[in-house]
Image (cartoon, rainbow, N blue to C red; front, top):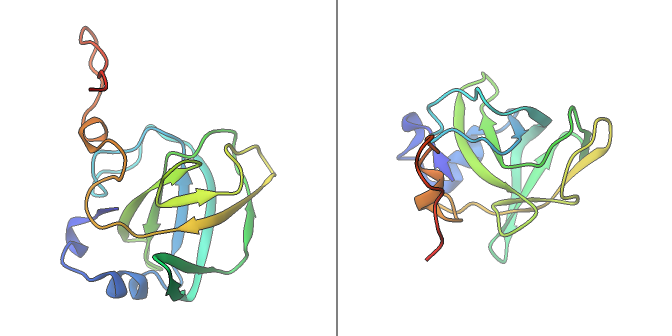
Length: 151
């Protein structure tokens, strides 16, 4: 999870409370370096609306997000890369890693197609940087430089 600066000192329970009535927007893979930066290179794949309260009781390290509908139709074709959570007033709270692998938010399908249902099947909140390869996701590719090589 990558928190917006305004909410950096909030506990997990406070963050869950802030999201009541807010949204969770799923984007394709070009995620910004921080939650404070506007999304400009990623397409919106789907948008969930949190119920109020936004979460039920946690169980075995998994969160129980409560959405107004369980599955939403995809808005575009693409592979989820991250999801941005906003309060009901539109203020950005956090970015979560999302996709089919070991991510904070896991979906029923690997990719999205317009009109097809998108459903969250796993939701965890991991405090700190992105759970996968934070050394890579905090950087941007530059022409003339080699791609990152795994150790």
